[in-house]
Length: 316
Image (cartoon, rainbow, N blue to C red; front, side, top):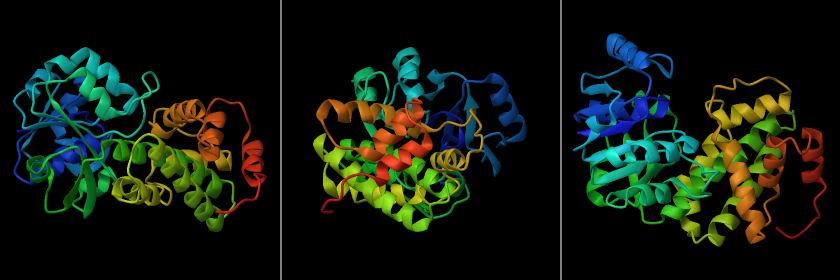
C-alpha cells in the first residue's frame, strides 16, 4: 500500500497513476465533504476534473490509516507542510516519507526534506520533483521526475510505465531547483503579460537559471543537479506553459488582470524566503529580489522592469 497526503491536483494525480499500476492507494484529505464527494462520484472534479479514481484508491480523513504504507507521499503546499508535520506527523509510520512540494518554508527557511527529517527522524526522507503537471500524470502522458534521496527500491515502487523516475542523492539541489524555478516562472509570466516578447522571456529564463545555479551552489548543491530535471527541466516547463500557476500569476500581474486568490502560487513565498537567505549570504539575485519586492509592494511593476533593464553591463 502507498499513502498520499493531500487531495489536491498533484496528490490525486499520483494516487491515480500509482493505483493504475496495481498499488492499493490511501489518499488523505482534510475536508470531509470533499472526501464524501470523491467517494460518491469517484472523481475529484474541483482539483483534477475529468479524471476517474481507480478502484484501488481509498480516500480517508484519518492520517493513521496511512500507517503501514511502503511509502507516504506528502503532496501539500510547501507553506502547509510544517503545520501538518507538527500536528499529525507523529502518526505517520512508514519507512519513507516523500515530499512532493516545491518551495522553501518562510518560517524555518528550510526545504521539505529537512523539515521531514526534523519532524520524523525515524523515517527516511526523500523528494519527488521535476517538470510535471498533474493533469499529464493522471492522463498517463509520459513524464520524468527526479527522486532525490531515495534508493533503488523506492524508485521501483513509485515508477510506472508512464512515470519515469531518476535517482539523485543531491537533495539540496533538487529542493532548490524545484523551489526557485517557481520564482523565475512568475517573472517569465510578467514578461509575457507585459507584452515584452519571447526574446525577453528567453533572456529572463537564462539569467534566472544563472541565479538558481549561483544560489544553489552557495548552499552546497551540485551544478549537474540544477542542469537536470529538477532544475533546468522544471524551469523550461513552468516558464512556457499556461498550466503553470506561477506563470499564470505572473502573466496576470504583467497584464494588469486579477488572479484567483484561492490558487496556490508557491513562488510568492519562495521569493521572499530566497531573497532573505541571499541577502544574508550576500548572493546577487536581482530577479528574485524584484519578485520579492513586488510581492511585498515595495516597488511597482514598471519600477521593477526598469531596474532590471538598467543594471550595469558586464561579461556573461
